[in-house]
Length: 449
Image (tube, rainbow, N blue to C red):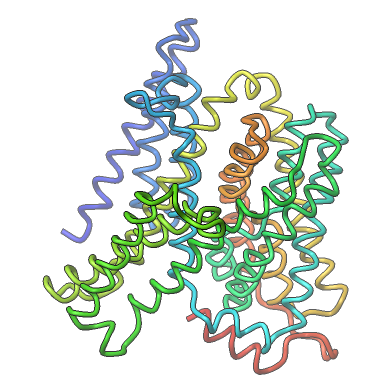
C-alpha cells in the first residue's frame, strides 16, 4: 500500500509519454488543429507524475502552469468568460486569497526579527528595490519592446519578493528566518516602493498613477496579509480562546457578517473603508471561514494537525495557474509575436537578480548563508501581484505578459539554484563586522528546522 501513490504516478508518466508521442506525430503530419488536447494532456499527466515523485515534486507546479498556458493558447475563449462573467475580474480576489495564505504563515515575531538582524535586512531591501527595477528597465530597453511590454518588465522588477523564496532559501541552505523577514518587509514596503520605482523608470512608457497604484497594493496585498496574520493566531495559538467552540463560533459569525455587511452597505461606507472595500470583504470572509473550518475540523471532528498548511498552498497554486491562463488568453497574439524574445528577456532579468544579489552581498562581507538568502529574495518576485497591477491599474494585458512568464520561470530557476546550492557546503564566515552575528546564525538554524 505505501507504494500505491508512486505506482499510480508511474502510470501518469507513461500516459504523458504516449500523449507527447501523439503530439509529435500530429505535428509531423501537419494536423495541427488536433494538437491542443494532446499537448494539454501531456503536461497535465506529467504534472501528476511529478507530484508523486520524491525529487521532481518541486517542479510539479511549474508543469501545471505549462498545462494551463497550453490550454489558454489553444482555447483562449475558455478563459474569457464563464456564464457571462468576465474572468478578468477574478484576478484581484485570487491574489488576495493567495496573500491571505502568505499571511497565515507569518507572525509578529517575523517582523520583530528586523531588530535582531537589521544589517542583512537593510541590505536585502536596498538590493530588492534597486537591482530588479533597474535591471528590468535596462533589459526592456536593450530588447526594444513596445512601451506596455517594457513597462511590464519594469513592473515585475519593482514588486516585492515572492512567497516561494522562503522554501527556496531552505532548500539552498540559506537563512530561512531572514528570508521570511525580508519577504515580509519588502511586502510592507511595496505600497510606496513599487509605484515609486514604476513612476521613476516606466513613467515615460505608460501612465503610472502613483496614488492609485499605492491604494491598489494596500487593498490587494496588505489588507489580506494583515487578515492572514490574525488567522495565524486563530489557527496556531495555544490560548484557551483559540481552542474553544464558543470563541471560534463567534469569530466565524463576526467575520462572515462583516464581509456581507460591507457588500450590502457599500454605497454608504465612509471614504477610507470604501477605498479598501474589497480587501475588507475578502479578509473578513476568509477569517470567518478559517474560524469555522477550525471549529469543525479540530473541535467537532477532532482532526488536529497541519490541515491548513496543506490546503492553502494548493489553493494558491490553483489561483496562480488560473491567473496566468486568463492573462495568456488575453495576450495570445502578442505572445505569439514576441513570446520567444520575452522569455529570453525574463531569463536574463531573473539571472541578473540572482547574480548581483549574491555577489553584492558578498562584496559587503555578509556571510555565505546570508548571501544565498539575499540572492534568492532578490531574484524571486511576486509575479501575481505584478500581473494584477498590470491588469487593474495599468489596464494592460500586454504589461501582464512579463509577470505571467516570470512567475513559472522563477520556480524553475529557483529550484535549480536551490538544488545546486544544497549540494555545496557553506563557506566559512569571514571575521568582519558586517556578517551575521552568532545570534543570527542560531536564528537561521532554528528557522530551518
